[in-house]
Amino acid sequence: MLGFVVAAQKETDRHRFPSSAMAMGDSLSYTNGHGGSPGVGMRTADDRSLASEDLSPSITLVTQDLFVRDVNGAAGTPRVVLVHTPEALFNSTRSPLNESSGSGYECQTFYRNIVFLPNSTRFFSILEQSCVTKNYTHQQNLETNESVGISDWSFTFREMSVRQADLLPVRQGLKPIADETVLSYWWPENSTDGERVSSPILYQEDRTDPLMSSIPSMATLSCMDIAKNGTHLVLSSSGFKRWLLTSLSTSNGSRSFIMNLTRDVMSVQGLAFDRSKTKLFATLSFLTPADVVKGGGRLWVRLVSADVDESGYPVKSDGGDTLGDPFHTVHRLGSPPDPERDMRGSDVSLSPHSVTSSGRCIYLMNTMSMDVIGVDPSTSKLTPVMGRGIETKPFAISPYRTPSSAFYGTQYTAATDIAATLDGCNLFITGGVDDPDTVSITGKPSTGLVWVKMRSRCGKAQSAEVVARYNSHEATGIGSLALQELEGRLFLYVGSTDGRIFELEISRSQLHVCSDRSRRLRPPPLSLLIPFLHLLTFVMAVLSVVVAL
Image 1 (tube, one colour):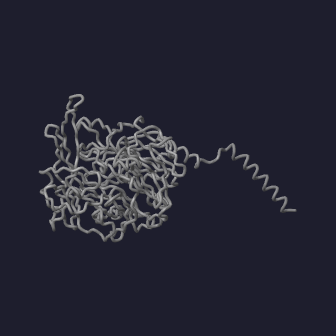
Image 2 (cartoon, one colour; image 1 turned 135 degrees about the vertical axis):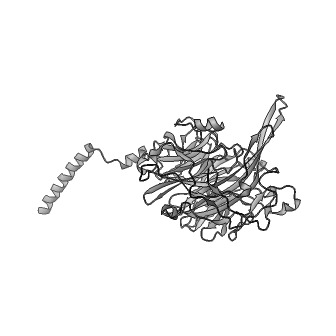
Image 3 (cartoon, one colour; image 1 turned 45 degrees about the vertical axis):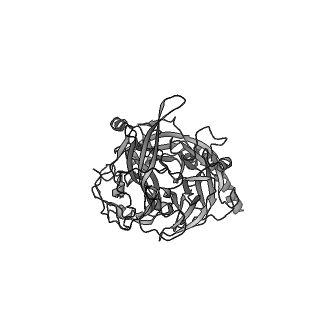
């Protein structure tokens, strides 16, 4: 039992958005009979997430030595520190995809893009709640005369918000679960500037009402990081005509337009400041100029950077590769001399927690294949870190985003993420793992936490090990990751697709030290030290004689 207590709801004025209100590229088809009746589109802003105090964690530690133990010698983590109980519309019973009926349905609630204020227990995240319908049809292949199965998915309900919470009362033992507040709900994509959106706005698919066609679509919030001064969050979102960057105040939730991204950008897959918060990095999926003219084609991905001020705004409006664009291209993935591999633009992500403290290494992840690559921004050098060929113990990595069939292939699932320690020697990855116990029960891979030890920072992986797995039915999993170093302690936060955030404290003494760091920390050999001491003694003797004269 998860122990959720569902919050009571009170419906206010109806406010819903039609199928035209979806973000660019979303495919929709109305499916009736799931998640409530059409028309309920706004919930009260006072709806709170509640949880019982005896909520049991559902993460099993496979490698317990990596994690801090309590005074009794038992593993002191993981523990649930934040819970959002899905509201009624997003708490529907899952209906697995049935090929005979041709449809399936399920919902997810998850925190993602978790970022902390510097040296603080206060953090921000994007909470997404969504329900997806997946349809399965057969079409006849005219060339082979064979029946081919085709599946497609569409959002039935969707809602986003930026949340904030403080873990200090939990750390102090005053509360079992942190309280959260809404900084702002999402906003219409053509409303780039404005005050805090204080009421939840529900997207509900409905093609039966032609009068709804004039309502604007919502800004899809894809990525987020916090600026140096801590007063603003920088978010990427779908815009009215193109993707854009928005500044969101951490004090009152008001938003300000920063800039439009260039017209060739189809989506933003990752956003992160360097550790000094003076550069902003982003992974952008884009079309070539020829494909922009055609209106479609293969998506590529590029890693870009821009110098920013303390609030996260670019300091130059035309310092980039294109006139009027502050972003420089650090690396275009898939271009020579990259190794030949599939670098589809919709699959390569960047995390605020995958940039090393020196800024000399950024880890990127292919969220479909779970390949990891490292890029040195100073030289643009790319190194394949970990691919499908690496062996992971005790379970194999599964090349699937999520064990959830209906969410497979959707852009904003939370089932894959990456975080790195400040020195870049240890990586943590969430994704599918072939746990035999889970596979034997569900027939599908579960999700787990993988610890990757690096040979050198931004070099090759030395080993990969599944250190924790998520125990749940196949519709949910763990995904989003955040690492925080605070007062000499290291905490790893893991978000699950049933609306929870787990805290795991890592034992720093168990962390791996990679070769380039060990060379920097290693004292000089004794064979070199002894001649140096002899020389120093001789110099001191000569100086003594000179002073005496």
